[in-house]
Length: 197
Figure (cartoon, rainbow, N blue to C red):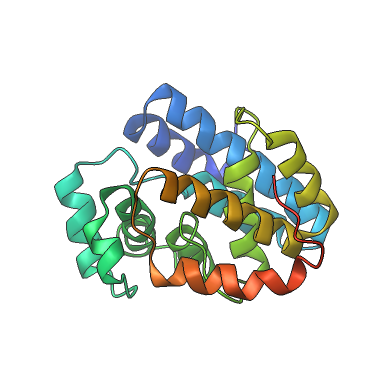
């Protein structure tokens, strides 16, 4: 059950739109975002909602994801338009704004950038990006170390997370959007000791 009873309708929507595994991930991310918001003094309720909805378009039809991405007005770059795995973030921001009528630019932006990152992210944007990386079911090598970074220094955690994500994408010969490069260059300043996973 959702932490907030007035979000139950969103929880039901997610149950209907997502596989059981993806639904559980979404709820785990919401819980992680709530905890990170508590730790860093962000708006717990809004961070929880953004975490809940971050993957709302993940399992929708690829054609619809691409269409929403193209029509979003959220400035997808050519790499994002050419990379199927990146559509759901931009499309998710569009869906939340246009279909769910959630009039909250920060929630929309947090969903839009939860996969790619960007420079100078707001606290909520960082929380959703990192909450997605360290949610309860995550079990990649180094996840416990990543969780420690997230609860020690959120900006250092962003640098370490971006290093990990870029390495992962490059190892698969994937494309990197400009916003990811800009995020990497920006958050390096917080990584004085060149820490990584």
